[in-house]
Amino acid sequence: MSEPYFKVFLRSRFTISPKEPPSGLSLDGQTGIITGSNSGIGLEAARMLLDHKLSRLIMAVRSQGRGEDAANTLRRSYPTARVDVWSLDMLSYDSIRAFARRCTSDLDRIDFAILNAGAMYPEFTINPSTGHEEAFQVNYLSTALLSILMLPVMRQRRPKDHAGHLCITTSALGYTATFQNRNADPLIPSFDIKPEKWGIADLSERYAVAKLLGQLLMVKLKDCVSSDDVIVNLVEPGYIRGTGLARHMPTLLKPIGVLMGLLIGRSVRAGALTYIDAAVVQGVESHGSYLWNWSIAP
Image 1 (cartoon, rainbow, N blue to C red):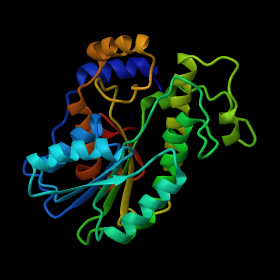
Image 2 (cartoon, rainbow, N blue to C red):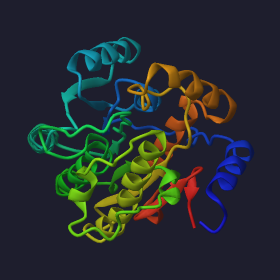
Image 3 (cartoon, rainbow, N blue to C red):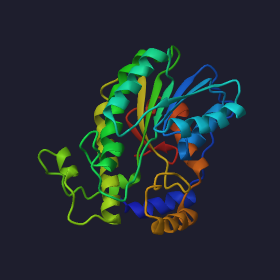
């Protein structure tokens, strides 16, 4: 990105309108997976996909109860579709592996998977299950593991008439990462060392680095599978208001986030439209690409 990030961000936010999927788009007979789909962009994307006659939706969520509540609403609105809620805890490697195994045993086809789950945590917390800092765990390590495990599953379960899509959410904040520990050896354990001070700037930096590493992972993932089998891409939904990404933030800071969302944020619907574009509209040309504003970023 040759221009400063915030200049590009503001220009794209106020000059580019959301792009609707092609009229007549039908997903009849197709099966899709969305992680983190009981709220926010994931849930809105689920609604839109069902609007286009998606036959089966797998809602992969951490909370079975909240997932079922969201799924029941969808089931009432789309009675002909099959909506399943499967457990997926991005803080647990065992849960991630179990989810990938279930995809193999329970699904006869996978047309697309949208890896949408992410989180921001105000406190520096080590996840007892894995021993890694939680934000880095969810936003990079667990997303990387799930992506790697899903590739062979999706290749085996690809539809006969088109390639599957593995869409991984990213953020242009990755371009702002200073990545001060880039030379640490080994690298990953360096993210588990608590800084002397931990504030909002550190939280933002950690999120940005996790997204940057996800973008670097894409460079390798695209070479691990033929685009005839699975199209792998990154999708940047933009700064979206009204999501649960910052739900763990301190109460005093939440009004600031709400105000920023009203001033410069896109709607949840606009964010979901970027997912639809990446998962069911973009074709082989998007393999290994970064999708921003409904197009392939240069």
